[in-house]
Amino acid sequence: MKLMLIMLLGITTGSVCSAARSTTDIAYSTSANMKVRTMQEKPKIEYSVRNGRASDRDDLKALYIKVASIPGGLVRTAEEITDQYIDSTLNAALERGIIIVAEYQGKLIGSVIKYRPTIKILSHVLEEGSVLVDPEYQGMGIGTKIYTTLLDEVKEHHPDVLRVDLRVRITNPAIRLYERLGFKKEGEFKELIRGATGKLESVIPMTWFNPNFKDTELE
Ligand SMILES: CC(C)(COP(=O)(O)OP(=O)(O)OC[C@H]1O[C@@H](n2cnc3c(N)ncnc32)[C@H](O)[C@@H]1OP(=O)(O)O)[C@@H](O)C(=O)NCCC(=O)NCCS
Image (cartoon, rainbow, N blue to C red; front, side, top):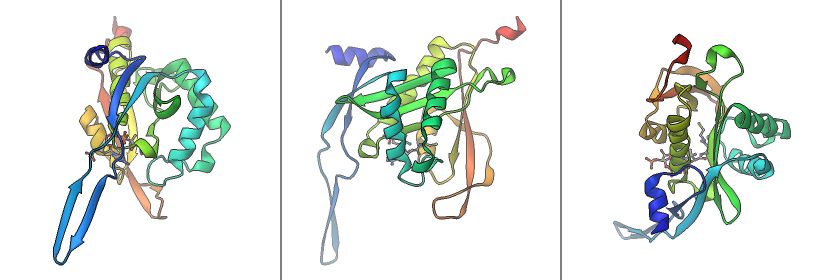
């Protein structure tokens, strides 16, 4: 009952959520000329969602390396997830942004980080940072939950933020997730990056607008 209440209230920090485990539970069996598809029951996990903190550093680094080891998602390779990259990202998020993490059995299984650039003309934009979920737990709603939590935090506590920006490679299925969250495509950077196969790939800039933005600069 308490758990239901917490989820309904959408409390951003320290909330407990549940998700169905594993996206690979679909079994196919073939007979003569017929394909039978059976869907197995997905076990549920209960994980918690909270704001990230400095002490998450090592777990965060391990999560980034695990996710970056699978090409096609994060733009950095696992080798490019250096101490310096993690420290600068985490510090920037703690100083001038938001970090939300998902935790399961004491382990970080998801994270979304967004932070402002340092230049003043972009102080109304959360631009840098990324979302990632441990591959073992992808497709269970965790990415949606942590990103929704971040956007709720912007709506409730950051009236000075107008835009949350991101860039996503055109082949990344995460585009559907972003569209469901309310992000809109704002064009296309043609053949901007070298994809995992070596081919050049386009990148889609997307943005979400804070409905509670207050432009105090003009007051
Ligand atoms: C993108 C990501 C954070 C989504 O988190 P998630 O917990 O798997 O997402 P959810 O379960 O909440 O939502 C599922 C949606 O995410 C998208 N998605 C992206 N990658 C996915 C994956 N490997 N498995 C399942 N869904 C994925 C799809 O749009 C899916 O919606 P669909 O069912 O309509 O296809 C996660 O898959 C991930 O870490 N990917 C690798 C890193 C990455 O690409 N980050 C974004 C860089 S711009």
